[in-house]
Image (cartoon, rainbow, N blue to C red):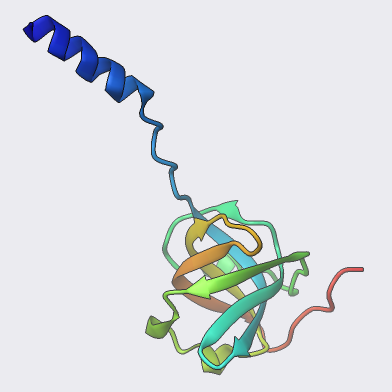
Length: 121
């Protein structure tokens, strides 16, 4: 009987889907306040694997890159985003892939440029 219970437990554990790993990423784009208190990153680069810390000075691009992505930003209350409104910034955080808009749960924000790059055509 113990063997049978063990086998059923083993089969149930194998049948359960593995939890999806949430990656920490870095994205660069134009910081916008879509509506009061709701922040987005527009003209954003593709997310690249990263760590949660702010980037080193050598990793900050000299010119603001322009991408084709948009991300909703969450966990924003810890950051003074109004000081970076309409600036190009690097956002790091947990990437939450979703439809229609993926989100980044922020761990850091770093200014790249006091202006935003023109969106790509």
